[in-house]
Image (cartoon, rainbow, N blue to C red; front, side):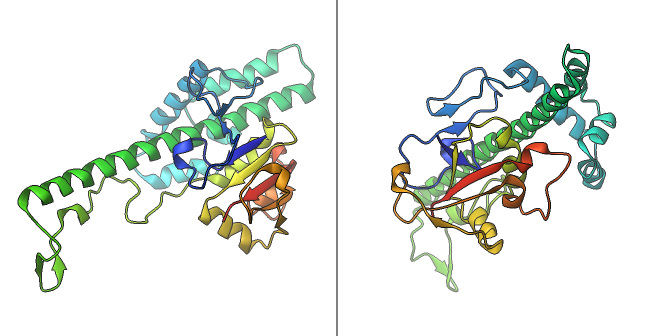
Length: 266
């Protein structure tokens, strides 16, 4: 299976068409897209996932100082939940603890719920990225319409400065003029192994992510043509923790030790 990375929405995959490309669906909504891949063994259904995200947003709104939120972000998952109002996650952990399962299966279930939680947050973040992009475009289109109504043209200049209202920053917080929103792809690459088949190839066209992998000097090689990827695509197989840029495997994220195959379209 060819799976988009790091983004889970087709709108954010910027490359030529890749036949059969799938987009990971962590179960945030009931409806699935035509090209979505949703695992059958997700610990949380869409109702629980939505409630968990809602609890996260409510928890974040408690902080007036971003530094306080950063403190919680630096803690382990267990410390984070103990200091928050995220009752849904506590219920999940309790379910695994009280179930008729052994210690190993219980720990795996808890790890999978944490992995899904990471992917749910990333998916939610992407949806807001897309909303901001649309808002930014709408504002700029409105300004350009005003330009046209006022009859402003390229020759309208004052001391070499173009009077084009469409170039004014809209300050919506969206992606504009080459600016990008920092996306936590490192956590996504460590969470995905919990749910994807062993033969999955993650397809990445994000220049920023690829540049960081180049800095790590990963041993890329030419992709097999049988994958059906564009000419010049390169692949590499490494443990997820290496792909995320860590120096060693994290004990708190067991799925980060799984190997992943990455295909990059430059």
